[in-house]
Image (cartoon, rainbow, N blue to C red; front, side, top):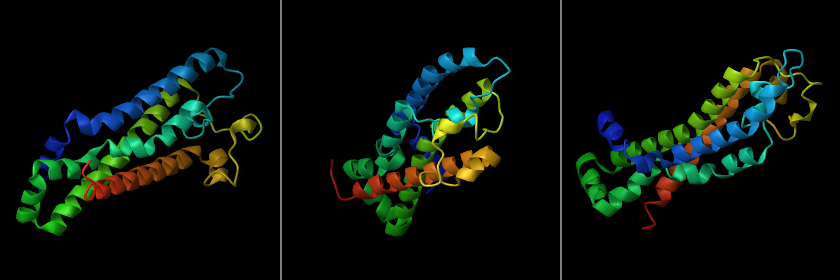
Length: 195
């Protein structure tokens, strides 16, 4: 199976639907917080940083909606390929020419990568836009006390105050792995369910 074949195949808007919905949620998040906090940045008080207002650390309703919709967003990615191959008959042609193992490997690999990209790109977009507008300083334990970064509920909470960029990368990677897992699950279920 050729990489260019998969790239051309994934250019269809149906496979990008989850990514578009995720970006719309991120834009809604940015539009809900930036107009409120930008007038408050006066250069003397730094309550807001890209790390404290990033979608993964913000406790707003938009953040909740995004993370609860990750399974749906990942199922609207390249994980749909197996189901469409079964309906079109290409599944049997792919198995005959490439073999069962090779066809399954490539389709599942495409599903995992597309599911991870569907989750990672909106999170990275949100952080980059916030980084462009808010001061890039480390969060302060006392100024940013109400952020709910607690050892029981967060991975590596000490990194939030010492190396927040490293923690951001870790959270993006975790979200990508979860997104790839959901896409793999969706793609595998598509082998057994016709709809």
